[in-house]
Image (cartoon, rainbow, N blue to C red):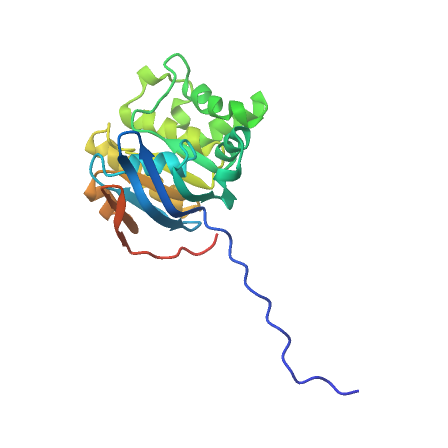
Length: 245
């Protein structure tokens, strides 16, 4: 019997799909307003990046398109490997609940609900039982260092603590992608630094984090900066690939 001297075939390396992939995306409104002009962008799993630009540059529209809250006029948007243009409204809702977490500038917390309930309520539409919702809410609040504020309502929390509750609410759904819209915009400098430190920690633990901001100092503190002007990407530095998780 003769043994083959040829090497066995090397199996192909299968890379995970990008968390976000936009190709030639435009968004236009009545009156000839073009919020996005042929934007292409890829975000790999595990990245930490800023989408930065002045007011009216198109970055907020990008947030809504990436978060599947708004549909583009033209072009292709893929999130977690799904072509969102091919999904029904119910499927889009399911995609958001399973893959995307949102953090907004003004927290959007219910005034009459304590921290646990505010976080747990974010799982209402994910089909999670009440006890599990509350267990996951407590765990998320512990993760953002608010274990001592579980029964406090928003009026009893500082601005930085409210934002951390909002981050915990986003994290409770275990999203692939966290979209943070001006997360320090309503905070003092010290509280803003705590929130940014937390976003860095979450990214280091494996969450893909995209920060939408007009603040160049915040943008420059992140590994990747995608700069917008007049609905277009004018720079993407450095356009690096993150290692698969």
